[in-house]
Amino acid sequence: MNTLLRSILGVVAILVLATTLSACGGFRPSANAKANQPLKQETVNKLAAMGSSPAAPMMIRIIKQSNELEVWKESRGTFKLFKTYEICAWSGALGPKVKEGDRQSPEGFYTITPGLMNPNSNYYLAFNTGYPNKFDRVWGRTGSDLMVHGDCSSRGCYSMTDESIAEIYALARETFKGGNPSFQLQIFPFRMTATNLARNADSPHMSFWKDIKEGYDSFELTKRPPTWDVCSKEYVFNVPGETALEAAASCPASVAQAVPAGLRAKMAADEAEIARQVASLEDKAARAAADAERAAAAEAEARARGEAIGSFIGGLFGGGDAAKVIDPSKVAPVPAPRLHRA
Image 1 (cartoon, rainbow, N blue to C red):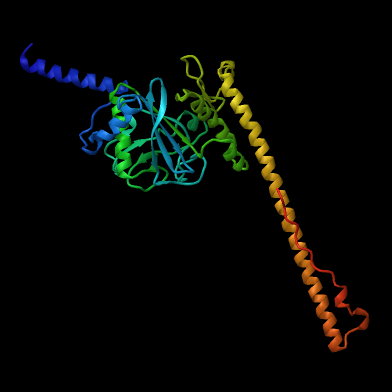
Image 2 (image 1 turned 60 degrees about the vertical axis):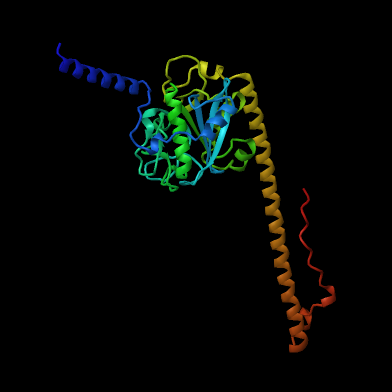
């Protein structure tokens, strides 16, 4: 074998190896200088202080209502909050994305792999959320190129400042370089507390939100990102076994059995608290409506009495019918609406 042939085969072998690594989740460096910005030393020091490192696993959680993007890093077996970044803009209202062009930002659980990183974004730097995922697809939801990116503008994406996305991108890059094939992205409309759910009880998205709340609660209890899958057209979490579930098929019995007792107890307690708060809010609304109705009736009665007094004075000076004369001293005072005391 001559030298030229050996060189050609060597290049081919390198290319094949690089492609294989990429297909298995390996991170291929970009020539883009923005994508290769090193982490600041203060960032590396902060990671070390919390018992983590740039190479450690990470997770991102987005809270729409409060415009927060959280980066969590693994530290001694659990995940700790590393930093919270302010989201410049996201599109639409609280609730999931449904179809292409609805200008709605997605919600749910997504898996970010190296192939979803975009070092050449028109919006400084970006990574794709992975929408539509398995859950979105089984519901027939459509949309494409839903990103977390820089440039502080959004059309269905989550936009950050360029400085923020540069650090988030670098943290993801170093996580992949550390041998992690992916990281989890969790997107919620608000912090999934009983109070927030009760306040939004009339939303058409309530069933979906209670579904993803299980994953939220699981992370809150364990500080480990839950594994997720889809069956019965619902998210399910931490299901044992390696076999992927059928998204549209009924969930096997093992799914319900996999919910830990602690998580089951928390979910039941939250359901009871949601019901209690919804009933309380409905009672307050009913009392407020009753108070408003009484106030309106009192105002109408006052107007009627004012007209009666006017008729009396008119009759006094203008020759009205004596039988219709009203003695002003007999006119009852207008009662004020009762104050509601909680």
